[in-house]
Length: 191
Image 1 (cartoon, rainbow, N blue to C red):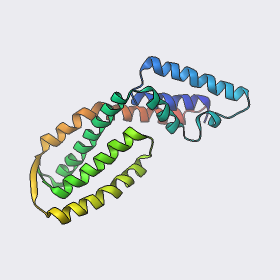
Image 2: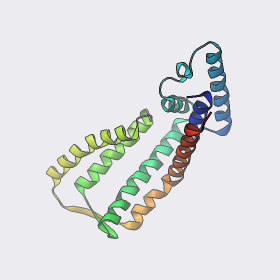
Image 3: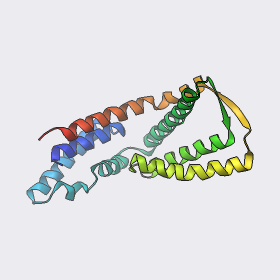
């Protein structure tokens, strides 16, 4: 990667992680200076940022972003995911009321807990590995809960409640999508 591509990838990562514009400019200036110094000394950009630019940017953003902001973002995204899944279930079953059983609730609570805990702790695991970890925990929890509680319906979830859960995370999800498009364009841009 060129220095410009590294700076663009870091900027897009920091944008969706909520780093303020002034702090982001300061971080970009500092990173640019480090990259230029490394280049002048005959070292590569990977010597400065390491093999994974996104992990580097995420680690630096965590240092800059206050815990409360990260926790708010993580909870909003957890609500978004926990709202998206029932909405998808509503659409697949083509119903306005979804019956919720104890095992269904335990499965999604386990996945949500893993998501929140991992994002607050590290936040740099690739999505496919994150989902594999979540399902590796959620499936046994679901099976154990089904074995212990049976098939009884706890309550029915109306479609409007599931859709309402999407709202807190919608701005973050849109910002993530926008940052992903910017990073993709920056990575494919010729030098």
